[in-house]
Length: 274
Image 1: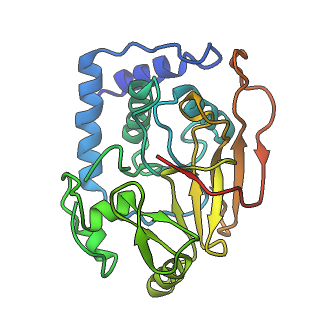
Image 2: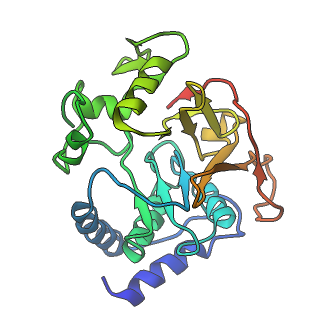
């Protein structure tokens, strides 16, 4: 993809910073198609299981809330000032899914080794039961998400304090898992923390299983119906984690980037499923 054309797309997508939330950015069909085609080649070349180095900024669900995505970049720094990992669920529900995915794909193309995008259940993919992490590495890509199996469970399962082991999921798909399963998984694979998205949490992040799992949700005022905050997790060179909080914007307030982001600790109440 021509570098000047790519920079032009990014510039136009960023021009709405400071404008009222919801101001649209018009990209041509040809530009959007090119973003999809070029980014697809990059995704195929990179492994399914990413092994990334700190420091890095980690963001959860965006769901088409483009103005809040811009706020996240204002707090964390525009690429390449910081490395980013997004955990999926970029589109659907919000009013600016197109702008959201186009900016993310554009940054992926421009900084392929510094900007990483995982696929969430609102994007889609498939396979069986997890025995080791090679099963994730070896997943066929692209693929559809089945009603059962490994890929379905990777995208749809949820933590629950009400059970030990596995339980039924009131989503009607996949399962819930208890704290014991988190501990077992981390010990088996020599990991310290599971970082996931996929659920609204009041303060933008929520710990589970004695801080062995954290849920991150980065879309404040989700769907205009929740008074939740959004959050971004920063991991420094020593693997220490901290959180920056995007407070829900006041209704009818003018859009701006003033003020410093809040850093908060603690465990908010359990999440709403998305």
